[in-house]
Image (cartoon, rainbow, N blue to C red; front, side, top):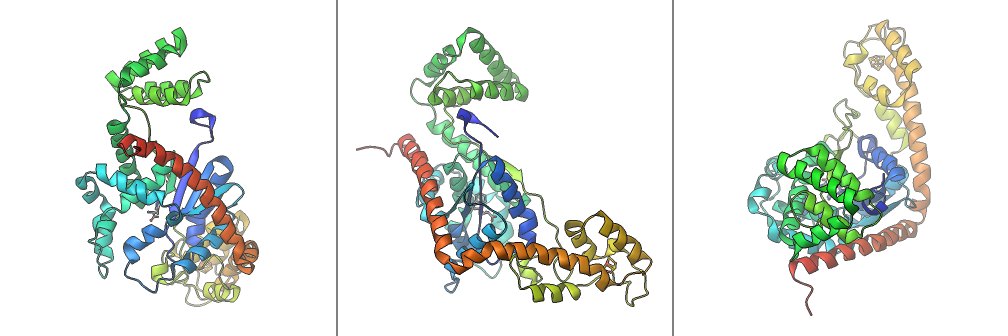
Length: 406
Ligand code: TRP
Ligand code: SF4
């Protein structure tokens, strides 16, 4: 996926380090990351400051252990440090700086309306989340995203309002700071550089969008500008900004790329989640996994071996959807409904498939568990790359808000 200025499109996502990852994370988020890394310029990071917003009181948190174990889980799942940039939020203090600058221009009302603000306070009643930091959580997240000019942000449904807010903050920033003096004149000069026909087309499309809200025209004009090889990056930004009536696009509005929701059931048949204590960790102990699956509840109608059952009422069947193929499905369906197979028979191919997947994860993780310096250096390298991009963005931001004086 190629975008502005011929660079591969950038993807960014973060995860809070709040414990070991499980198969729900794998089938929801991590497999998605692994696919994206082949196609996009991916930045994945540990959101340790975000973890502090809800766990600031927890002095025994042991952040370091959570962080390194989580990064090993990513690597075990197949995230490839040669193809992606992996880093830790707090190692790039620019995130805090951008958070501060963005907080200046973010109206309080926008933050109070973000649904997670009230929802989480309700849900985590035992914590005092009436804090400045927690209200500002989505601003920090906006800083994470806007820092890297990411055009796509893979997140779960619950995070979509945060991406929406990020877009609004970017728009407001560009509106406030993207109109350098003489902006319109500069935009006109840039249009002239498109050549006679190009300029005519650009004007026509711009009018269609600005005056009639024609989204298709906007898309077309964007594509036209992005593909143009003859104009400078500054002119491109100007022309893109001018299309929407605003100034230069200094901060890039991202899109949310919805991560497929994982409904993977846990060992008690409920949705797999750390808070239900029913997880299979990514790198779990094989004996524990086998025992857990063997005692996992099935269709309650199958009290005895010869009672027929219905896979649609059985959480084990949901795991089969993820882990086994069509012939096993046919065998389960027929065997369960006719009581030809027992539940333990039914579980065996599933156990085999999950243990095989876990063997691969254990194998990938081994070198990192054996030699902790390896993960440290992957992160150090990622932080260096991230820092370069962050510094570039911050120079422009400082400049925009009037802080680049001597
Ligand atoms: N808020 C996200 C979550 O709880 C984590 C996160 C922090 C994030 N910064 C981000 C996700 C930036 C995507 C992009 O899952
Ligand atoms: Fe569930 Fe399989 Fe038992 Fe049927 S046979 S109830 S699908 S575990």
